[in-house]
Length: 248
Image (cartoon, rainbow, N blue to C red; front, side, top):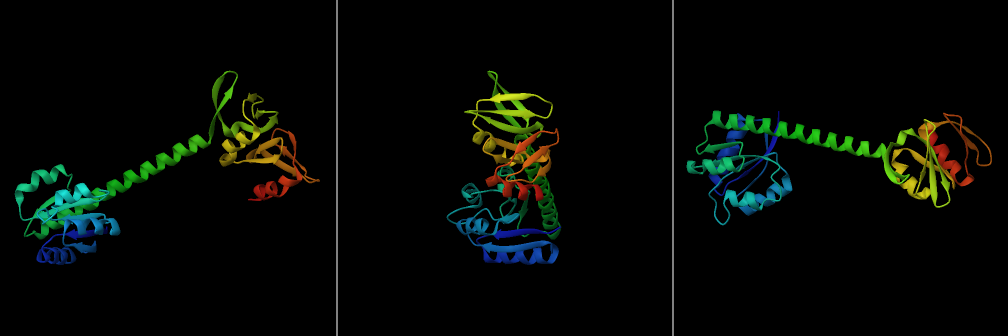
């Protein structure tokens, strides 16, 4: 498995030595760039978005720990590379994947890269899981609707709604199971809440659940027949949009 990386070290010899070792022993590591100071390292991380950062600790003006505190994001695996072993405890507090002492032993470098790849794979899995949960939560919210009715708020499934009809400053939902809900919303507000769930306005008085449309009867504007047999008028101004939606 490959991983992208940057090297941040104020000593040119240290940067070059690590780059050559990675090229020789860890060919799956793609070096996106190198920086010679903490501030340059921040800019490099922001521009390159590496998955792995090799970071020296003792650097002039801004050391490795200060650089991490100033980073906009820490969305990368971290390996400290330093000649000073007494920094190891603080490095662990910074959630480093590894701590390598100069000169770096090839086997230790390989193990550090393997651990970094494993950490990034785990993080990637967590991110995908979080994205999936967020998408499911959004879909769940789209598939249900909280409506004000009979002095209380009731959560209903949008896919149980056949259609809604305007009733003055109110509207009425007609459900698949035969129930009706009289709601303190104008029809436009109901459409705003339902449009992402497959509902369309077909007439100034009606919005319909497109999944419940059985057929369309041509005419001046025409009519739709729903799965329960209900027949609803279609206005001329809504006809083309309805036919396009049914054809998609």
